[in-house]
Image 1 (cartoon, one colour):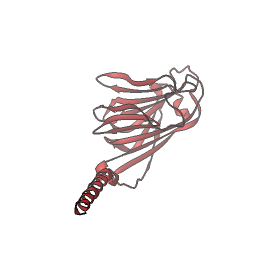
Image 2 (cartoon, one colour):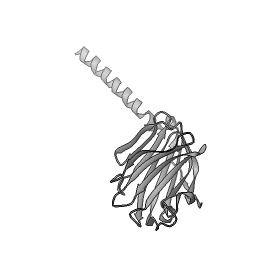
Image 3 (cartoon, one colour):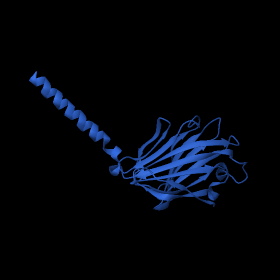
Image 4 (cartoon, one colour):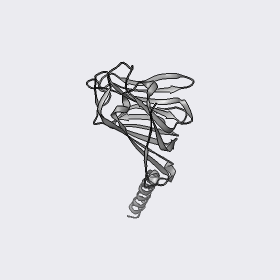
Length: 210
């Protein structure tokens, strides 16, 4: 099981953590038991978002690119995102837990994803797990009883006798997490609401005077 480091970046907001990983194509040319593991510099706890850009060139129509996001507190718990080869562009999302085992929560056998659409996985303490492909929501507020990411694994072959799944390109994963309360953007809706309310009050008072 090969291990790879990840590279961190420094976001403007000090309460946030940002890791960006470019996964080389050959990391996917293994079976699940030999999956390549990538360790992130930061631990992304509770409130996090991941953007996935799949720029891989598949080597055969049965090849896949599979990502397993592991819960750092329990290695038997993970979220799996799978992207199949052209021309079908199969796509699935699955969850594995110690109590319930492995179960698929979303699957599309045709046109489930495309290289020009960013896949976004996000989790929050209030809303649980959600996933979008471009603008399309495919998993909405699934309760996974909390999730903290420190590492993930990738693979793409179903059997060691299969031909390589991928022959070029890469996949980029961007991890962002932090306390939303410490982020100024978190307060924007409340600021806008307060400003709108104040404006309405002023207009009402002005109208009464006239």
